[in-house]
Image (cartoon, rainbow over all chains, first blue to last red; front, side, top):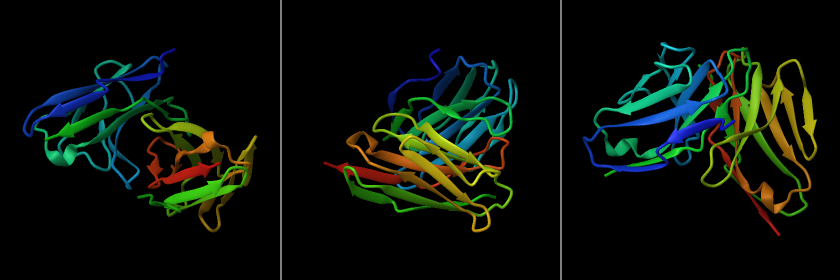
Amino acid sequence: NAGVTQTPKFRVLKTGQSMTLLCAQDMNHEYMYWYRQDPGMGLRLIHYSVGEGTTAKGEVPDGYNVSRLKKQNFLLGLESAAPSQTSVYFCASRTGTKGGTQYFGPGTRLTVL
Amino acid sequence: GENVEQHPSTLSVQEGDSAVIKCTYSDSASNYFPWYKQELGKGPQLIIDIRSNVGEKKDQRIAVTLNKTAKHFSLHITETQPEDSAVYFCAATSGWGKLQFGAGTQVVVTP
């Protein structure tokens, strides 16, 4: 099992450009999450999904969109990147049972100039 | 919503000594408390967790304690080794998925 994988690992964008981050998991997990990690602020939830075809807003959703067309994939989109979106982005997944462990991907480091 | 505070933000210990990280939470409905270790350039990895019906859990050199009345939980690492150097995050959830993380503790183990 590869677990949770993220593509790409690094990306540099110019302000106003768009991009999509891909998260894939091979553990047949129901729930998937996107977090951003900034120095001194821990991990903050952007959006999450409790199943194929469903998405919901987290703590910091503004400027991001997501889609979960297939159970194993969760896409995070930036329509018009801003310097404030410079961060490390982590995807996670877990089973649908109560209190299930979240497993994290290796992260994507995004810089917006 | 849930709010988790974590202290200290940095912790320097000598190899062989113990390290303790403390977290407090605000939502009395929270019932699952995982701890994650994040090494440089990697994603967080679960190292231990505890549920609200248990007061203490131990796994080799790592232990976690939970005080529901006071709404705080702690991570204890004994006999620290250089490979314990990392950032540690506590988290809390009421069980249906959304973890609220603390800000993290940078642990440095010096030989």
